[in-house]
Image (cartoon, rainbow, N blue to C red; front, side, top):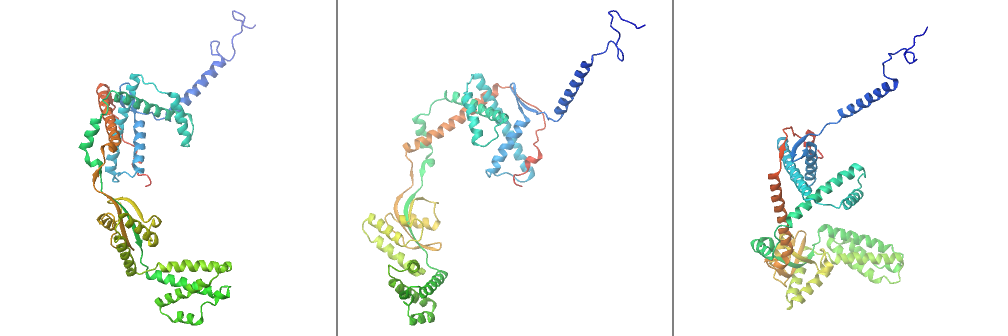
Length: 443
């Protein structure tokens, strides 16, 4: 006869009557799996370490490292002098780390002061700036990226607001401050001697220039003999060709020039297209020949130009004549503008060029001188001797300089006061940076 319990329910079979229901066992198993996953994930995360307490906030090791890394790369790409020897390099990085830690401390104190003063920021405007910054720089528009950039901008705006608050309580820059700075720092406003000049450059033709010119003339002679227009093809007689073939190199160039010039004069205006093209090449090549001179000829021409210019009585007439001759003969830059050099200071030109430019009287042309492979003339149009920039013109520069000095002084005083009131405590931990950070970029 089956046993019954009080209440009429038979005892459980296969398990104790006081055991957990099956759904509690399932719940316990799920909790154990989740807890194990969390612990496993936590094992893969390296916790950041506090390196300094600043009142009730902390600066972490990772913050310092990332800031040092960023500053190091900026200095490296800017070409700053960074020691390459390992010991000196590590000392350089350690000094940079300490400077970074102090700067982060100053910024944290300023942000804390901004909160104490109740600084209010336009967060909507800052969020708009962040979105524009990410879009304009083609950055990934992730939530983490936006949050990081927003925190940076909020921090900068808080620091700027605190500095402006304390700057507004400082004395304003007065005209007497500006005048005092102007009189005490004359070297800053000294204007060096300046000269406004014009330059005429001619390059004497080299032996290779003459050989190349003669080859071009010979090529044009062959084209003349094969021209479809009979009057052009037969313009040079056999006797002339024979003289050209027997002549020495210097004389041959002269005979070729005379023969081809006579051919150019015989080409009619209504000639065939091929003949007109020949006429254009003849004009260009013969014009190049007229500009070819040896060194003695170039010096003689420049001396004649200088004598012609300086002989005129009026300074304006001398300037205009020099500009005309420059446009006519110069092979240098800005020949169409009369070789205008505009205002020049000492150190802005070649030493030889400056010697003649600053020694030539105003309204006069220099004598020919050698400048590299060129022979040169200069004409001095105007000159300003050493002088001081006026107080009126210097005022914006002085005001900006004094404002920057005041901003730096206000920040230094404020940070000094905040540090005296603050509770700053360093943690005794190893702050050595990762070895791979000591490798120069690109090595």
